[in-house]
Image (cartoon, rainbow, N blue to C red; front, top):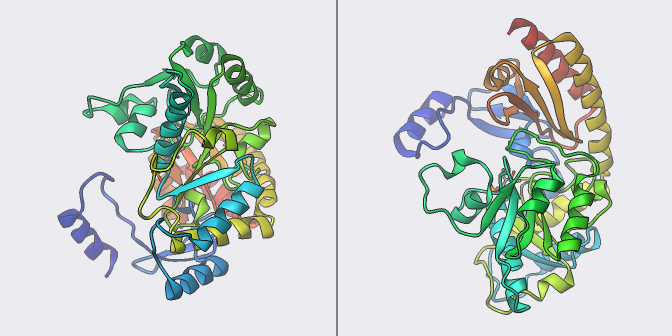
Length: 395
Ligand code: PLP
């Protein structure tokens, strides 16, 4: 089918929640994808921070194919070898001793919220309220839109779920003020992905950790977008030299195969008892095998270091571009999670680059966002900078 034919079926049969889509990506290899009309693109968005190894990485493809030929699904009624191997590699490379697997980021956050509440409940304390940040994004389920500090996500969905409070991001005073005796946890993104690439001061996460310790509440980090190497560390909390109590992951963890995860310390894991939580598909053999291959490849191929190096290079090049184009007001983000605040509509730049064969995305009306695979090289950054230079000139 060509793009127009696919578009007609979408208009006729798919719910209109994504707006009009005019490009259909049908094939990918490494840093490149091709649309239904045969056009090639350099992918600097990786399916919203998902294809961290590039598209169809041979090791992930092999793991998926082998597992698909062996066993796709059994349910969590049985032990699942790829799932326990995935839990082990995550545990050995993070602070979190215990892991639970699900199918998406929103579900991982649902699990984290349930765990925080039940942990305090099991201790006989009534601390169900969770403080999150203004402009945060934690998912699209009823609970996770309620947790997200963005009114546009709440519009028309009242009544929202109870038990969430919002405080300004990057302000310890605001968090401190929000912590009343009924608060049991703080839930934050280390860098606010969907909210416009809000990047806190270097000292912020450490101060949040100290605040949580002082007030005896849990620190939950939503690393769904920042995790698995994206910011130049395997997990973004490492930049702050702290560890949270609970972490959530998804996106880059399966390189495109849907999987989410929630990890915590042994102590916090005592909050769940048998039957407290569960999932039919979560961590099933196929998804867990893909995620294990993804995480081991990120580690083996030293992609975290490459993300740090390429992130720095991209940042430097963008700084130079900012000198040239007054419509660029700010460069935000960390590693290969980079945003450019602009005075023009972000979508104009996204469309201009797509016409030049490069995929990027917006993060709100005036921020353009780069989330390339962690495998990019300097020449790929140069290609994007040249295209941006020409597009800003023309715009
Ligand atoms: N949390 C963060 C920080 C995200 O960026 C996202 C997705 O963009 C989510 C949660 C929700 O993940 P999912 O779309 O897999 O439910």
